[in-house]
Length: 238
Image 1 (cartoon, one colour):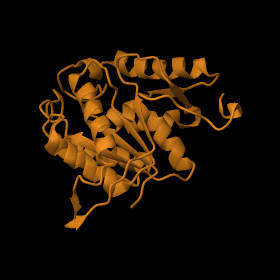
Image 2 (cartoon, rainbow, N blue to C red; image 1 turned 90 degrees about the horizontal axis):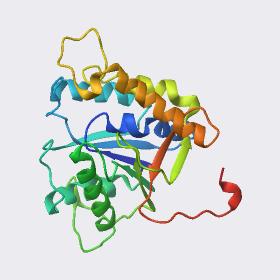
Image 3 (cartoon, rainbow, N blue to C red; image 1 turned 135 degrees about the vertical axis):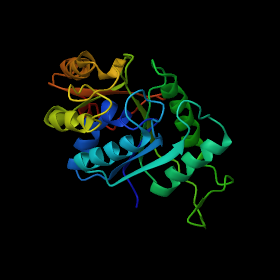
Image 4 (cartoon, rainbow, N blue to C red; image 1 turned 90 degrees about the vertical axis):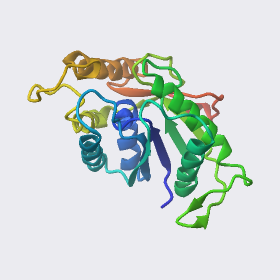
């Protein structure tokens, strides 16, 4: 299946926190969107790899994703090396997206920046015909998407692009809440963590409000770009 947008996320729930409103908006516009998670989040203090698998599947239904896969990389210890790059390249070539969204280049969690570098390098290498990959035993064709953006995560980074997600904010929050073991849930007897506090969830909403305010919307999500972006007309800008 060819996707319009492929989201690369190192942990299940990264895409939900960073860009699920944008995912929902583009699916509503008729675009095909999928997520490839790099790890199962098995080093998380709360829950297990198995609960994260189930939560990711529940969130995928809320978002209406056309595909969701997990590469099973080792949480916390994956590398930006040839073997990992080849797996990400295989996913990019499999889904042939026009746009890729990836983790933040710089963030509180060291996995995020390393995953962004892995995504960035794989994005470029996927377009080289002399790199050979297989899908179901069949040689894949090279494919380089036309755009790579990074969604903003915990650390605030000045965005290059802001997307109005106002009509989709409630569904975004529901997709985050699908990860019941990870975020604030007073019904669970689990250790407290940075992201399980009610303040973290409130800050996620506040971030969307602040980004929205900057473009005259109620809620928004922000993205950065390593390259300069162009438009056909100034009237495409808001």
